[in-house]
Structure formats: C-alpha cells, structure tokens
Length: 389
Ligand SMILES: [Fe+2]
Image (cartoon, rainbow, N blue to C red; front, top):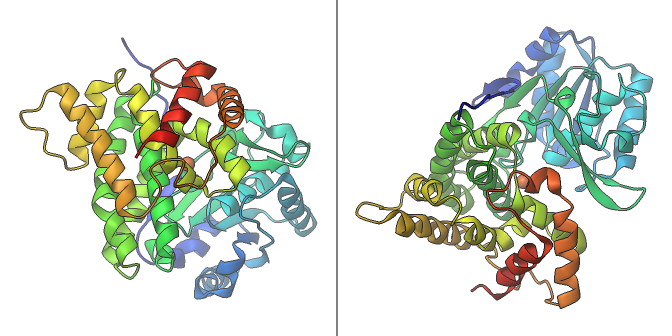
C-alpha cells in the first residue's frame, strides 16, 4: 500500500530562554500591535516581563488579556475577541496552558471569519486564516502550540466541542522549557502523561505513518526516561528540557495523525466529574490499550522497546504485553490513577451506558482506532477500567 502523507507544522523555536526572541518573531509576522493572551498566573510572574521586554526591544506595543478559565467556554473566546477587535491587533501571542492557547487561536480566527465561536465547531469550518499567532506553552503536555485544534465548552448545550481546522494552526511555536520550570508535581505528572498518550495513541491508530511513527517513538523514549525525574524534582532543568521536547514532539504526532479511543472515552467522563484531562486519560488508558493490543501487536512490541523494556527472546505477544505493564507502571510511578475507582467515579450501569453512547458519538476520533468499536465494546472497556487493579 502506498500511503500519501501530509505533515503540517508551525515554525518551531525550541530551547532555553528562547522566550527572549519573541519580539523578533512577532515583528517577522508583521506586528505593530500585539495582543498577549495569558494565564492569570503567568501575568503575575517574571515570564511576562521577559515577553514584554522582548516586544519593547522591537518597539512593538501590546495589551494583555488574562480572563482565561481552566476549561474555557465560548463566552471566554467572545470576551477575548471583543478586546482584540476594539484594539485592532495584528499579531496574537498565547502564553499559558492548552486553554489559553486555544482561546488565542479562536480570537485570532474571529478577526478574519464572520460568525460566533460555536459556528466553527467541527472539521475545517474556519475558512480563512486568522491573524498571525505565536504560541508559548508554560506546561509540557497539551501540544496545543503545534496543533490545529481548539476545545471549548459550548454554552449553548454545555458540551465540550472541538474546532479542528488547519486555518487555526499557529504560525510560530516558541517552546522555552524554562517557562515550565515552576509547574507543580501533579501538573507535571498529568500533563506529561497526556503528552505520552499524544504520541502513543496515534502510533497505534490507523492514521499512523512513517513520519509520525519516528517522532512518536522518540517522544515515548524521552517521556518515559524523563517524566519521573521532572515530577520528583521540578528544579531539575535537564528533566524540564527533555519533557518540553517530548511534549512538543508528541504534539506534532497528535496534530498529524490524531488521537483516538482514549481521548474519545475520556471526554464524557471528564465532562461529568470535572477531573483534569491527563488524569482522566490515565484512569482508562490501560483498559483501552488492552482492547486494541490484538490489532496492533507488532506496534505494541515496538512501544515496549521504546519504553526501555527488555524484549530480547520474547515472542511478539509477550513483548506487546510488556508494553501494557510498562505503561501501567509509568502512570502508577508518578501517583496517577490506573483505574476509574481511583479517580473517584461511581460505578453504575446507567452511567457506563451513557458514557459509552457519548464516546461513540466521537466518530472523528474513533474512526482512527485500529479496532472497530460499538457502543457495547466501549461499555466493556469502561467496565474493565472500573475493575482493573
Ligand atoms: Fe490530550
């Protein structure tokens, strides 16, 4: 089979203290007036001063919008857009976690596309590229700096939905590991595992290709090696450096090959219990992968090897199952849940059924899965995620 591959990426600037270059990149994009969309926490720290002094160094004027919520609704996007429209900004900088970057992408898109934020939910609904954007992540996990996705709570029906459009792909991803250095251990753990899953899930899906596979395996090596040290000692800059790099690489895999069943099943669970994204994924991760291991045995064996497991002399089946054990250990080792009981959810037949029905609606994600999944199959996976030790 001869596969056609498309691989999109923003210009990537990665390295220690690269945030000091942001003014130069904003200028290259034609900036006169810059809107900085930032996490409220970032605005209080010294990181903002570094962004500001770099912009001032290029004689660029800027304003700051920081009314960001953890799981932003379409109303937050409208608020950012109102500020952007009135200020007539021509370059947008998003500094923060995934939520902040998502709001930045949509605020920029609304500058050149007519409509409300909810008009753009779905695939390729943003018809015109927005104003140029620079994304600066302050956690190592979401990969939003290199993706064409933005996720918001639709205030019309209180459901989280995704905008997936190449026209909201950022122009520049500026990744400075120093900005993640103050991330607390539990956030480092959950965002780090989210990044791991952004590499592993597409690698095991029908959408995998040789380009994303190469990047995925290297991201998996890096994250497996450095997640524990980064959680154990946030001041370990070598660990921060590699976790930022691993997360960036995983973001490229996510963007170009897409996530699948783990993310699809996590959405309704996280929506009901308001558990953080990475933590919710962990609670169902091994149960999901156990269900697809028979479809992708060879790939699971490669995953085990990338995770540093000794697979010499093992059969392919044994090596594949070694990957499941290694993933289970990785999640446990940083104190995250490996089943739904630990997440604090309550097992009820009607709840499992409802989650399965909602997850099954995520056909954009499930169509990539290596195994075809009915509602009943998803119920079995959720059951297993409750029962698993
Ligand atoms: Fe994710």
